[in-house]
Length: 191
Image (cartoon, rainbow, N blue to C red; front, side, top):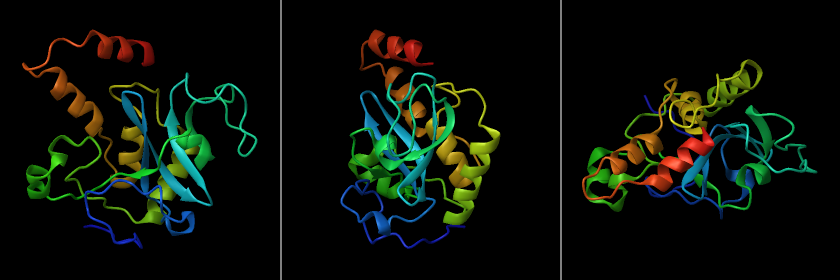
Protein backbone atom coordinates (compact mmCIF):
# COMPACT_ATOMS: atom_id res chain seq x y z
CA UNK A 1 0.00 0.00 0.00
CA UNK A 2 1.36 3.44 -0.92
CA UNK A 3 0.68 6.24 1.50
CA UNK A 4 -0.07 9.45 -0.37
CA UNK A 5 1.53 12.64 0.96
CA UNK A 6 1.14 16.30 0.09
CA UNK A 7 4.09 16.11 -2.32
CA UNK A 8 4.07 18.83 -4.98
CA UNK A 9 3.11 17.36 -8.37
CA UNK A 10 6.30 16.31 -10.14
CA UNK A 11 7.26 13.45 -12.40
CA UNK A 12 7.66 10.23 -10.51
CA UNK A 13 11.30 9.89 -11.47
CA UNK A 14 12.27 13.51 -10.84
CA UNK A 15 14.73 13.92 -7.97
CA UNK A 16 15.53 17.61 -7.63
CA UNK A 17 13.64 19.49 -4.94
CA UNK A 18 16.19 22.20 -4.20
CA UNK A 19 13.79 24.82 -5.54
CA UNK A 20 10.90 23.81 -3.28
CA UNK A 21 9.80 26.10 -0.50
CA UNK A 22 11.05 24.43 2.69
CA UNK A 23 7.54 24.73 4.16
CA UNK A 24 6.18 22.50 1.37
CA UNK A 25 8.58 19.61 1.94
CA UNK A 26 6.55 16.94 3.72
CA UNK A 27 7.78 15.46 6.98
CA UNK A 28 8.98 11.91 6.52
CA UNK A 29 10.33 12.47 3.01
CA UNK A 30 13.40 10.35 2.18
CA UNK A 31 15.94 12.93 1.04
CA UNK A 32 19.46 12.71 -0.29
CA UNK A 33 22.35 14.86 -1.46
CA UNK A 34 25.12 14.06 -3.95
CA UNK A 35 28.64 13.73 -2.55
CA UNK A 36 31.78 12.80 -4.48
CA UNK A 37 31.35 9.11 -5.48
CA UNK A 38 28.13 8.52 -3.50
CA UNK A 39 24.85 10.00 -2.26
CA UNK A 40 24.07 10.70 1.40
CA UNK A 41 20.54 9.85 2.59
CA UNK A 42 18.30 10.88 5.46
CA UNK A 43 14.75 11.61 6.57
CA UNK A 44 13.35 15.14 6.58
CA UNK A 45 11.56 15.66 9.93
CA UNK A 46 10.29 19.20 9.45
CA UNK A 47 11.42 22.58 10.79
CA UNK A 48 14.48 22.52 8.55
CA UNK A 49 15.90 19.37 10.22
CA UNK A 50 16.93 15.91 9.10
CA UNK A 51 17.75 12.65 10.85
CA UNK A 52 20.47 10.65 9.13
CA UNK A 53 23.03 7.92 9.78
CA UNK A 54 26.68 8.95 9.55
CA UNK A 55 30.03 7.23 9.87
CA UNK A 56 32.80 8.30 12.24
CA UNK A 57 34.52 10.56 9.68
CA UNK A 58 31.42 12.59 8.79
CA UNK A 59 30.63 16.18 9.56
CA UNK A 60 32.44 19.48 9.83
CA UNK A 61 35.40 19.81 12.18
CA UNK A 62 33.85 22.84 13.86
CA UNK A 63 30.42 22.66 15.46
CA UNK A 64 27.55 24.11 13.42
CA UNK A 65 26.27 27.34 14.97
CA UNK A 66 22.68 26.37 14.08
CA UNK A 67 22.47 22.76 15.33
CA UNK A 68 25.81 22.03 17.04
CA UNK A 69 26.72 19.08 14.81
CA UNK A 70 30.37 18.30 14.15
CA UNK A 71 32.42 15.16 13.66
CA UNK A 72 33.47 15.56 17.31
CA UNK A 73 29.87 15.41 18.59
CA UNK A 74 29.45 11.83 17.54
CA UNK A 75 28.39 9.55 14.77
CA UNK A 76 25.63 7.04 14.18
CA UNK A 77 22.06 8.33 13.92
CA UNK A 78 22.09 12.12 14.27
CA UNK A 79 19.63 14.98 14.02
CA UNK A 80 21.00 18.04 12.26
CA UNK A 81 19.86 21.15 10.49
CA UNK A 82 19.23 20.75 6.78
CA UNK A 83 22.32 22.85 6.02
CA UNK A 84 24.59 20.33 7.80
CA UNK A 85 22.84 17.45 6.02
CA UNK A 86 23.36 19.14 2.64
CA UNK A 87 26.93 20.31 3.33
CA UNK A 88 26.73 22.66 0.35
CA UNK A 89 24.93 20.19 -1.95
CA UNK A 90 21.46 20.29 -3.48
CA UNK A 91 18.44 18.66 -1.87
CA UNK A 92 16.94 15.69 -3.73
CA UNK A 93 14.12 13.24 -3.06
CA UNK A 94 14.35 9.46 -3.27
CA UNK A 95 11.62 7.88 -5.41
CA UNK A 96 9.67 4.84 -4.24
CA UNK A 97 7.22 2.70 -6.23
CA UNK A 98 8.64 3.67 -9.61
CA UNK A 99 7.01 1.34 -12.16
CA UNK A 100 9.43 -1.15 -13.72
CA UNK A 101 8.24 0.00 -17.13
CA UNK A 102 9.32 3.59 -16.40
CA UNK A 103 12.72 2.39 -15.19
CA UNK A 104 13.20 0.27 -18.29
CA UNK A 105 12.37 3.00 -20.83
CA UNK A 106 14.08 5.99 -19.23
CA UNK A 107 17.61 6.95 -18.35
CA UNK A 108 16.74 5.87 -14.80
CA UNK A 109 17.35 2.18 -15.64
CA UNK A 110 20.43 2.19 -13.42
CA UNK A 111 19.25 4.96 -11.10
CA UNK A 112 20.56 4.31 -7.59
CA UNK A 113 17.92 6.67 -6.17
CA UNK A 114 14.79 5.01 -7.57
CA UNK A 115 13.18 1.78 -6.48
CA UNK A 116 10.15 -0.28 -7.36
CA UNK A 117 9.66 -0.90 -3.62
CA UNK A 118 6.59 0.77 -2.14
CA UNK A 119 6.93 3.31 0.62
CA UNK A 120 4.53 1.67 3.03
CA UNK A 121 4.50 4.17 5.90
CA UNK A 122 2.94 7.59 6.35
CA UNK A 123 5.19 10.62 6.82
CA UNK A 124 4.47 10.73 10.56
CA UNK A 125 5.29 7.01 10.93
CA UNK A 126 8.57 7.53 9.07
CA UNK A 127 9.51 10.44 11.35
CA UNK A 128 8.55 8.35 14.40
CA UNK A 129 10.79 5.49 13.23
CA UNK A 130 13.69 7.89 12.57
CA UNK A 131 13.30 9.42 16.06
CA UNK A 132 13.21 5.93 17.62
CA UNK A 133 16.47 5.07 15.85
CA UNK A 134 17.92 8.40 17.01
CA UNK A 135 17.40 7.15 20.59
CA UNK A 136 18.13 3.42 20.05
CA UNK A 137 20.76 3.56 17.30
CA UNK A 138 20.91 1.66 14.03
CA UNK A 139 23.89 -0.59 14.65
CA UNK A 140 27.47 -0.07 13.53
CA UNK A 141 27.92 1.96 10.35
CA UNK A 142 29.21 -0.07 7.42
CA UNK A 143 29.41 1.46 3.95
CA UNK A 144 28.32 -1.75 2.20
CA UNK A 145 25.85 -3.36 4.60
CA UNK A 146 24.53 -0.72 7.03
CA UNK A 147 24.78 2.81 5.69
CA UNK A 148 22.70 6.00 5.49
CA UNK A 149 20.56 4.65 2.65
CA UNK A 150 19.85 1.45 4.58
CA UNK A 151 18.70 3.69 7.46
CA UNK A 152 16.43 5.89 5.30
CA UNK A 153 14.88 2.95 3.42
CA UNK A 154 14.28 1.16 6.72
CA UNK A 155 12.50 4.21 8.14
CA UNK A 156 10.39 4.50 4.96
CA UNK A 157 9.54 0.85 4.30
CA UNK A 158 10.48 -1.25 7.33
CA UNK A 159 13.15 -3.01 5.24
CA UNK A 160 16.76 -1.84 5.02
CA UNK A 161 18.24 -1.87 1.52
CA UNK A 162 20.61 0.18 -0.58
CA UNK A 163 20.06 0.63 -4.30
CA UNK A 164 23.34 2.56 -4.38
CA UNK A 165 25.32 -0.46 -3.13
CA UNK A 166 23.42 -2.78 -5.49
CA UNK A 167 24.08 -0.57 -8.52
CA UNK A 168 27.73 -0.01 -7.60
CA UNK A 169 28.25 -3.77 -7.28
CA UNK A 170 26.56 -4.33 -10.66
CA UNK A 171 28.80 -1.72 -12.28
CA UNK A 172 31.92 -3.16 -10.65
CA UNK A 173 31.01 -6.63 -11.95
CA UNK A 174 30.44 -5.38 -15.48
CA UNK A 175 32.77 -7.00 -18.01
CA UNK A 176 32.80 -3.70 -19.92
CA UNK A 177 34.61 -1.87 -17.15
CA UNK A 178 38.19 -2.36 -16.02
CA UNK A 179 38.82 -3.15 -12.34
CA UNK A 180 38.19 -0.09 -10.21
CA UNK A 181 41.03 0.22 -7.70
CA UNK A 182 39.98 3.78 -6.81
CA UNK A 183 36.47 2.59 -5.95
CA UNK A 184 37.89 -0.21 -3.80
CA UNK A 185 40.22 2.28 -2.11
CA UNK A 186 37.23 4.54 -1.42
CA UNK A 187 35.31 1.69 0.23
CA UNK A 188 38.31 0.65 2.30
CA UNK A 189 38.91 4.21 3.54
CA UNK A 190 35.26 4.89 4.37
CA UNK A 191 34.04 1.68 6.01
